[in-house]
Image (cartoon, rainbow, N blue to C red; front, side, top):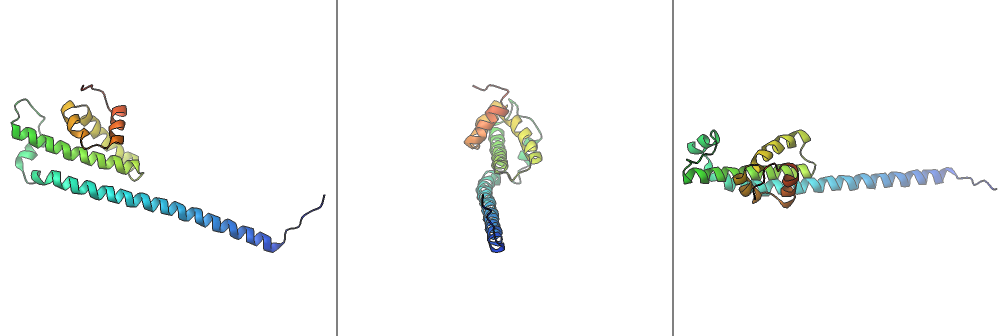
Length: 154
């Protein structure tokens, strides 16, 4: 069997190719991360516009502050019911935003756990669930049905 000798130039070329390959992998990963951040920024911007639209009529209202401190009741006026529903829409949208950021890996587990607890309470209130579903993405609805549902509202 004949030994093959590899000269120094061949080793240098091999190491150079490995370096270029490693650099390309790194650049690819960076591009993927930048794309994920750009998508998350677009999602955040769209959700913020919708959030501003939902919350604007509620700003500065003392009645809203009072409603936030009391549970719903059979004695709520139609105006109070509408205000509570608008608050629920806004809260559902903020939960959806948290879900989207978490799904992209841009929200910590600890931050998601807080949102998850808030969402569970909303989901298991049949009236608020109906309102929230209209703000949730399809993937978020599937998550809620799998992880939160303790009450059957059908």
